[in-house]
Length: 613
Ligand code: M6R
Image 1 (cartoon, rainbow, N blue to C red):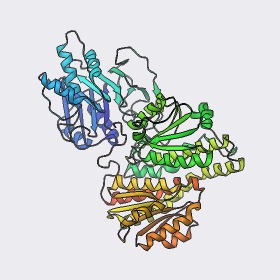
Image 2: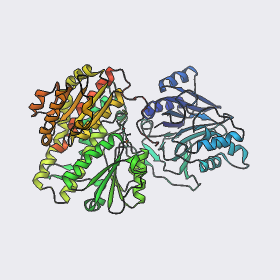
Image 3: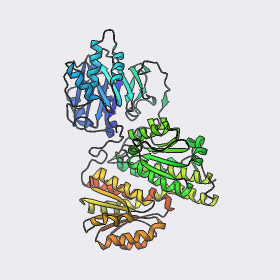
Image 4: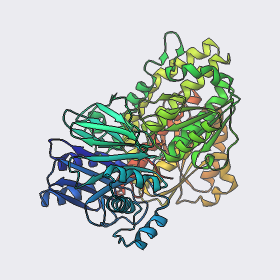
């Protein structure tokens, strides 16, 4: 949510900042801006995409060797030119970009107004610039850095901040509490960003700022300290991502690229972890805590959005394969209801970005209460991955499209591997069964490839028939129920069509009233053990003239005869089926959204990583 970028060095800062903002645009895209120091403090900002900012910067011939930039996802104040970041102090000498929410901004703003300050915007961010300036100019002997620290002491809320002051033209000040920030270390140049994507092209050396830390950055040095002014020595990490991974590589959208990457991302997720010859699984990230996991009274899984859907798949998996009771929670609900969790329990958090505010808060809540906290994350170095006691990375590669696709399948693969390992250690899976599971798991990438190769055209045609449908219903049972939810979420978030996912049997308890000849109903009927029941539900839809799209496996001829449209996927073991059944649903939502002219990678009102509550 919102992206921050900063640069100091010999390059043209405008170019570095604009390029960086384009890479960060998936985090927020309602407005963008930059501030540069080039003798004076120059700001260019406005509503809309980074491309508008780029045009404006070119027109005004902006230049400089030091600057900060921001792409916004509005929280306080509508997306317009004035509310765009950077925000300036009253004298125009201090510029601030901010990611997060200042919870006491109203109180602080009132106080600042009473003391004579005037405000331009409706944002919470502007008070930061104003407060720092007030402290800096009114308190004798206070340096600018101290003024920042004093201001941050008064602020309640979350922030990732980058600050410029025309009086210290060689420095960028950054601070973090609750919103990610990292520093890219180059040769006589430094980069700042909310995530690694704007930096990877220039350096692979990064320093992650933790909560409660700030840094003073010049072209040749960086000094990290706590907000209380204690110096810190930070580890310099090496980035493992490549530039290719964050570019479209000829695809029209990141989402399509990421859908088509799934054979590889699933294989990458399993690489070095499943041993087909010996029919074994080794998850290094949780090896040290595996006994706690085996002995856990129960596992609670907390997550949001798509990650919550994979958590539901996890519930089925852990209960079926490892006989461990599981509860799945929306992270946002878990954190605020004083959850009953403690020693002997395991909280498993799932997050692609590793920065989702509610998931992070759930993690901290459970840790405080004494539970063992494990994570499944995609982004290495993310806050969640650093704060969990142990965990497993999904290794799906950067996911840029706002709609999550390859992260979902990789999360499910990790959950499968965890459940199998647990089941085996608990003596619940025989070696023959394990052999069968592992062999089939290793065939999944090829099966996904098969679906992508053989179904793409059928789905495109189907999408053109349903492009203007106002509603969709998605139904599934067992392992296909979370997939139904995920299919509906994909459609609504990128095409703005209202869609609901339901367990198929629930249809009779209300949603069946919606079905008529105008209602497309997507049934996921590819799990063998629920097939007969699904057939009855399908008959009920047909009897009410619903238009039936079925995702079936190769053997399911009964449903094939009933459905208006079918996508056939290869057979697999029921508990692996979400890895296959979700693929046609991702494609269907993608093509419908494209047909409707929607901005697939950056749907309205959304942001890739939800770092505010
Ligand atoms: O990064 P996370 O997995 O924690 O993100 C959770 C949700 O915000 C995310 O899955 C969201 O629902 C996606 N837009 C779904 O496509």
